[in-house]
Image 1 (cartoon, rainbow, N blue to C red):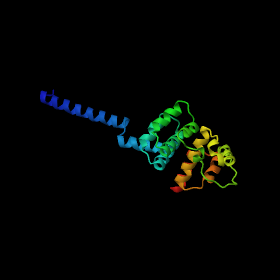
Image 2: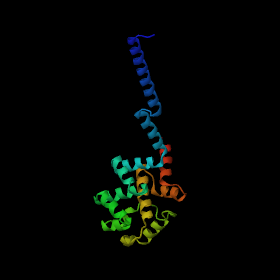
Image 3: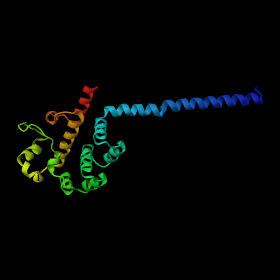
Image 4: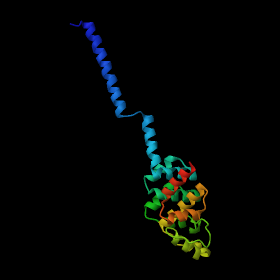
Length: 200
């Protein structure tokens, strides 16, 4: 039989062994934070919104936390509209969000802040044929350039025009080229992913 001291030593060994096994099990189930972050980052790179986020942050020179805050309140495609109007008019994004969520459309908000609808347009060849989703917007613009304030733009029109400006400026592309891709059925997220692949 084991003596008291030997039993105590054995008890300590078993306790330490049990703790080591428990720690190993925890590590297997819950990987270290660095590994978890790496996996999360990998998933983000596969997420179209991650590409949009990078472009928003770089183009508008804002913190990621602001993008995250905005994304909790509005759809992702409207974020650049908020940032565009905010920077052009020096208006707090929260004010714009409250107006938008209160029922105001982007055209009303623009006019309220003294922005003419023509501020959303980027130059394209005058004779260029523009299809959806830009056909109506550029059709209005070409007919009413002298009376730009009376141009009618839907929320979707403004979202597309702002994203057109952001993507073409950010990647140094002719806007009409981006318009052609959109008219072919490609979304802005898909366009950004493809441009990044070519760049890499």
